[in-house]
Amino acid sequence: MGFATIAIHTGQEPDATTGSVTVPIYQTSTYAQEALGKNKGYEYARTQNPTRAALERNIAALEGAKFGFAFASGMAAIDATLRLVKAGEHVVVSDNTYGGTSRLFTKILANYNVEFDFVDTSDALNVEAAIKHNTKMVFVETPTNPVMIVTDLLEVSEVAHRTGARVVCDNTFMSPYLQRPLEFGVDIVVHSTTKYLNGHSDGVGGIVVLNNEEDAAWIGFVQNSAGAILSPFDSWLVMRGTKTLALRMEQHDKSGRAVAAFLEEHPKVSKVYYPGSTSHPQHALALRQQHGFGGMVAFDVGSFAAARTVLETVKLCTLAESLGGVETLISHPATMTHASVDEEKRERLGITEGLVRISVGIEDTDDIIADLDQALDNI
Ligand SMILES: *Cc1c(COP(=O)(O)O)cnc(C)c1O
Image (tube, rainbow, N blue to C red; front, top):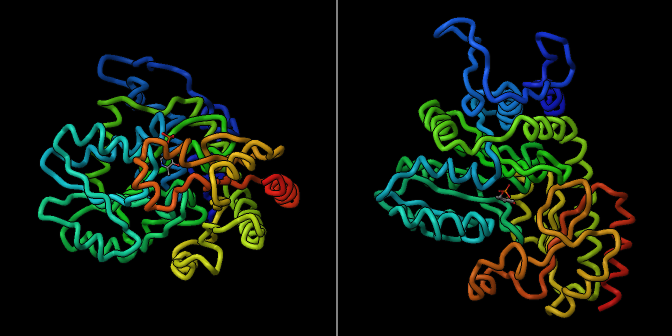
C-alpha cells in the first residue's frame, strides 16, 4: 500500500460496533468490567484508550514501525524516550537541536547524572569522536531548526551501532512523508505531532515510534507510569491531520522550493537556508535521504532592525512560534524559539539577529511570495 492509502486507512478502519467511518473519540476515563478480572482489554484510560491506540497504529505504519506511543506534547515524547537512558550513561546530541530539547537535556535530565555532549552531527566523525564506553544514545534532528543542517542518518547509525548505542531521530521538520529515518538504520523516531502531523495549528502532541520490542515495552511502561498521555480528542485531531498529510506535504514542499528560490534572488537577503537549494552545502545528501525538502526556510536580512521590519510588516504571514500548519508562520529564532540558547552558541550556529524563519503554509504560492516581497521592500 502507498503512503496516502496507509495514512487514510491504517488504524483508521470503520468502528466495529457502529460502522462509524471516522474513529470515535472514546471520551472515557474507565471501562465497565463484565466480571471480576474479566474485561474487554480496557481497564483505565491512562493505560489504554482506543482512540489513542488508533493514532499510534496509524503513525507507526507511516514511519514503517511496529510500535507507537502518543504523548501530550513533543517534549513529553522526547522525555519518555530519554527514560531509556539511566544515571551514569551518556548521550550524544545534535548541537543545534530544537531549543526545548537542549533545555530538557541540560537543565533537567543532567540533574539525574545523565551526561550529554552536543556535537555537529552533520559530520559522522564528530559523533564517532564523542562516543564513549557509556554512550547509550545518539539523538539527532535533521534538518535542524532553524538553519537546516542535515545529518547523514545512515552514517550516524553505523557509527552508533558499532558500540551498541541507539539512534533517535526527531523527524518533526520532515514528517514521515518526506523522510523515514528507520529506513536508514535509526532505531527510534520522535515527532512533535503539533507540527506537520496534526498540521492545522489546533493541538499539541507528540509520538515515539520504534521496532525494538524491549525498548517499546519500556516506553509503554513509562507512558503508563509517568502518564503524559495524549487525550482522546487530540489523538482524533492528529488522525484527521494525517489523512491529508501526503497532499499537504506536497504543497508545503512545492511552495517551500518557490519561496527559497525567490529569497535567493532577493537583494535584501544575504543568505538562505534551505536543503532544496543547490547552494546548500548538503543538497546532495538531502536529495538522497529525503523525498523532498518541505516548507521550512530560514533567511538572513543582516540586522535585527531589518528582521523586525520584515516580521512586523508582513500581512498574510502570521508572526508566531511553531510550524507545520496550513497557514504561513514567520518567526525570529534569536528572540523566540532559540532565546534560551546562549548567545555565543547562537552566533556559531548562524542564528543571528537578522535571521528570519518561515514555515511556508499551503496558501497560494504567489500570495505568500507577494507578501514577503512587500515586507522586504520596507527594509
Ligand atoms: C516543536 C518541536 C518540538 C517540541 O514539541 P512540542 O509539541 O512543542 O512539545 C520538538 N522538536 C522539534 C523539532 C519541534 O519543532
